Image (tube, rainbow, N blue to C red):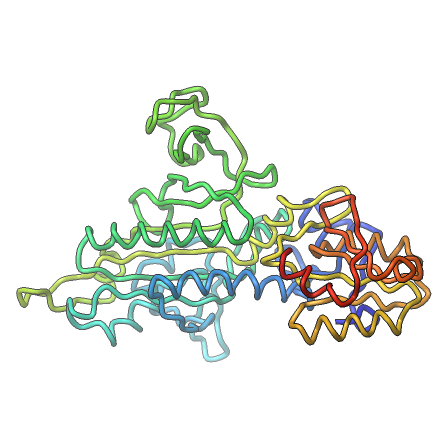
Length: 413
C-alpha cells in the first residue's frame, strides 16, 4: 500500500474523546474512527489487524475440530423469550419492526445455535460437536469506555460445543484452554486463566482469560509461582497476601486486567430450553451438556495496543501488524519503487511512504506512530553506503543491507 493513496493519514493531535491509550493511538495512527461512544469504523489498516487476529483464532479453533459458520446478528424475540433471556439479559438491544414484530441484536448466540444444531445432532454418535463463528455483537452498555476495550458494537469469536457427559465436556474444555493459551501466545499476549462467576450465562464457575494491563476493568489476584488466578470482583474467598491455594509457594498479588476470552459450562440450560434431546447409548433420551467459548477480537486489538506501545506510538507484534515493513522514501522514488515491487513480489506486506512534500522527520514520526515491525529507509545516504537502512521498531540501532539481501533478511526477522 502507498501512503499517498491512503485516505486516513496519521495525525499529531489527540482526539478530545480519547480517554485511553488504545483510543488515542488507534485514531492518531489512522486505524479507527469513532462514530459515537462504543461504536467505531475500522479503516483499512485497522481492518487488516482485525483480520489477522481473526485468522490466528480461526486456525487454532480449526485444530480442535471447530466448524466455522456465520450466524445472523438480527434475532427474533421468540427465541430469546424461550430461553428466558429476553427479560433477564439487561444489555440486550431490542427492536420493533413496522409490522410490530420484536427483534434483538445478538449479544451472544446460544438462542440461535442451539435450535440450529438440533437439526444435526440426533444421537450420542453425533457427539461431541463444536461450531463457531466470528461476527459482530451488540451490548446496550450504560457507559461505553476504554476505547475499543468496552464497546456497544464489537467483533467476537463465539464457539459452542455439545457433549454426551460432563466428563467429555471437561476433557474438551482442557483442549480449548490449551488452544486459547496458544492463540494469545501467537498474538504476543500472556493471558492468565482466571476463575470468575458465570454471570447471566450459568450459575457455575466460569473461566476468563485475562491480560495484565492498567487499562483493564477486572481486579484479579494471581500467583507468580504457578498459574493460579482469580477475579476478586466475583469470588471473595481469596485476599491479597494469602498464600496461593494451589501451590502454596507464593503470596497472591493484586493487578488490573482486561478480559480477552472466556469459557462457560452451560450445562443443560439451553438443551432443555430448546428441547434438544438426543438418543443415548442405551436408547434413552438425554440432553447434551453445552459449552460456550468466546474471544473478543476487537477487544484483543485494543489490549495489544495497551500492552505494546511507547512514547512514540504503537509497537505491533509481527503476527498482527498491518504490514511487516514500513518503507520510507526520502526523495529516492525510483529506487524505493524497485524495492517496494520486489518485496510485494516476494509476498512481503509493505507500506510505502511515498508522500511528497513531507519532511524526513515527519515520515519517521509517522512510521513510529503506526508501529510496523521493520522500518526501511531509502535515501541518498543509504544508497551511498550500499543499500537500505533497516531498523526494528523497538530498537534504536539500524544497519545497512543491500537491496538484493532484504528478502533473505526479512525471512529471519
